[in-house]
Image (cartoon, rainbow, N blue to C red; front, side, top):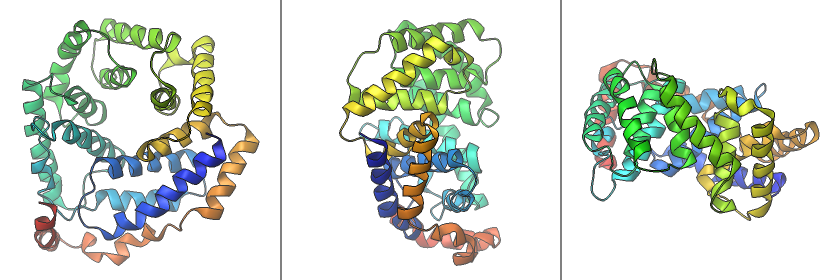
Length: 314
């Protein structure tokens, strides 16, 4: 997949979905939430000239017309548990990046139900996706979930004893351990497993491309990945995987494009920026606070808005 094709693909998905996000008062589910979270990071990486999108995205993320949304996101649910866990991951990351919902009652519900469901997750640590949810809470909002932060390292040890983990799991574990004190040995153990996978990756290019993209775009803080040998392996495999795939999951397209932009040369970066300028839909949602002035009213008015829409969310 060439950089121009990927750029046009992401633009098409962005233009298709962002007016939908703007006009739909139901809180989006995992795919759409993740798409816009990754797109937000893409605009941050693009830097100067794209600030209006960051403002618009922040307002969209903090808009929460259905404050009881969170009570239906049980990570231990027998049918939707894994998906609910994934939604909490995105929610934690968004809250850490741009803040909690404007609505104070929605913020209280966010914290209340997240703590309740994190405790349920802690008691069922082997349910699907729960390790991601627990680790994400600590990685992104450690002060809010200090009890989980103090407990998590011992559970990560148990996860490692169960067998090898995917690179995605290892990366989120390392992110959580950044917020935990005196865990150098555990960190080294997880990092060793990640580097061993990088040196001898297993799986298909379709799965690999997201892993390499995440290593490039989200793990820059990890000094060990700056080792010239490891860095070269990552870059070469990312390029090889991207060349081998014909398409990517639409909700992951932004993080893959971000990684591509980070490693692109000057000409390719300018080409990507030109395509964006020519084809990306205008940031109409930059005016969100003006269009929906209830966001700036007092809590009582915001709660009235929540009552109007919460039936739809159920």
